[in-house]
Image: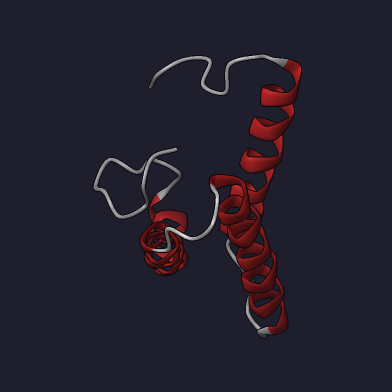
Length: 95
């Protein structure tokens, strides 16, 4: 997925601007997980999924419309796990 923090992010001007804050939070959380060498990769992915679910619930609790950014990442992780279990490659093509 392209990073919303880059100028080439093409979901649309307003959506791209709205995704910058969630992307920064997730990026910082992933960096925090990366520093913890006591957990396995799978445990870190599970923690990331839990973080995404919590962030999505917090976003839905606000009075304004959310971006759907967290849901998109959750869907990507779920699809990637399914492909790994089936023995398929996670990344089919490069953009």
